[in-house]
Image (cartoon, rainbow, N blue to C red; front, side, top):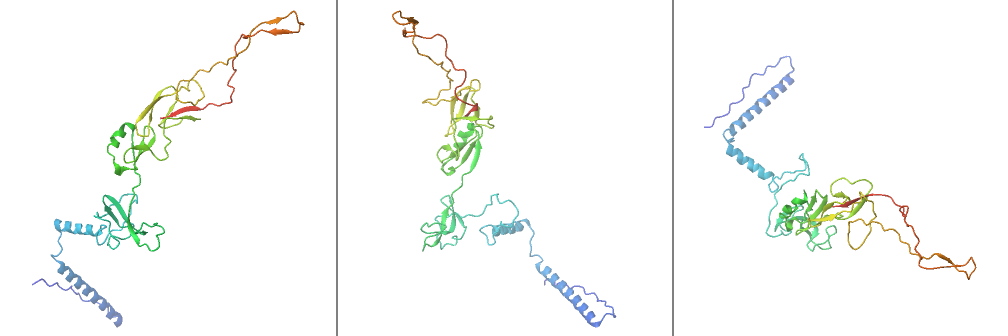
Length: 318
């Protein structure tokens, strides 16, 4: 027979006779309540004896059960809203993979429920009708609720130009939208799923820009006559020889082809007539004729730049 729990020892309650009878009676009731509570606690402890295991396998089973219940698919999913931490950290939850998008009668068709169908993430949106109505203002008579695909936002990475080829070799159609900062040329490229193009807001390369002060950071080279590489939109490199405006100031002239050689300024020409003045005796002394052509001696040149100007620093965008 199981051991019967012993009743709590009940020492005599000593009450000073001078205490009024009604107060003595209340004190005895309190003492009785305390003894009864102790008896119940002892009985409960005895009943659990041997029924709670603390062995490692049993504790592991309990912990696994608790873990399943507090997950997103469990009976008591844990709410992350009230937990301390940073909202920017990824939180993993159970997202079922389905052979077809669930109908609205399915238990998964609940606000915010996510499923994976053919490798694509879908989320149930109660504002979208079955006919694809506007999510803000569903069409009249449409039955709200539909799983809609979650379009991934472009992600970002960085690499030097020499490491681009190795990075591109790992990319595929599912990586479309990836933004790549090419750090040594300070350009952003975008992966389309099959190739590279200039990223959003990129002004490209291979052009000249004037500055009041020298630009800082990668991607610019002073026009000092050097041969430099520049980044193309497909991630490869091109090359160009720069004009040397550091040593010799010059204006930029637009034409049909690029030429980095600074052309020497031409000396202005003069075309005239030559012949000494001849006095003709048959006319008055004040009358004469001029024989042509006549080339005056000397040179013609400009004392300075005939156009108002200021000087800027010319740089090439690599």
